[in-house]
Image (cartoon, rainbow, N blue to C red; front, top):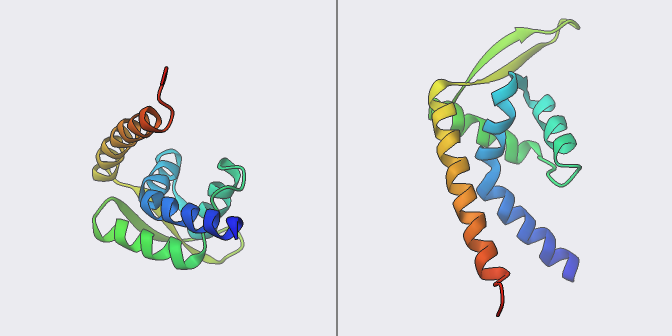
Length: 117
């Protein structure tokens, strides 16, 4: 039962962080969907495992909000893939999101781990 509760909590945390994580991945290079899933898994040591039902709606929201842009390209195998790029607006938004994240985690840590009490 404890495992189920932890998984639900993890999913809620991920839901609130998905866009920040995706924008962070796209800062370094353009990526297609499956590549984003693999990179997220790799960088988080398996903690974040995106599913299509989470990934593509988030990518579509980011694209609709002009934070990323998508472009179809042929790969070496001849398969067309949609690569996503972070826009300048996306970079600005990400900087703001990361600043807020740092303030939030600091405040959570101050409450959760009070010193000297």
